[in-house]
Image (cartoon, rainbow, N blue to C red; front, side):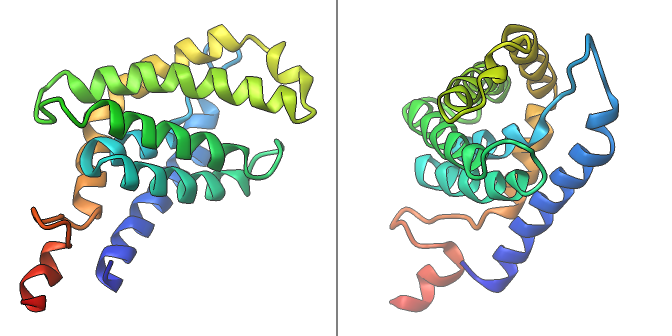
Length: 176
């Protein structure tokens, strides 16, 4: 990954965290707010496959963990699993399908919220299972499904393109 690619990815993660912390926290429906940081690993998994989804999930999860009162690393761990899972589940599918980002965001967001609450409870935060996990998962899933297509476009712009040999296209030709 070049410095330009790293700066693009950093810019997208920064944009998501700023929107999350300034806008999404103020939107409350039934006491629950949307969580768009969950979209980053899913979008990266759709755009770049399981490895890039896992990497984006870990990186964006660590950034989110810095601002959350939950156990540090929980968002990074769950984001890594979800990014990898979405990338792996969509490997054999036509990724240009119009419905794929929406469905991946819907299902992935529900899984993220449920696993987040379960693992948080196991790690000493039992209240995470008692705060309306189903309601939270539903709201986050619906909001992320609506925002999935723009998120995939942003992440697609940020991630370096990969050639058929598995090398980034910016360096694949210079290695021959």
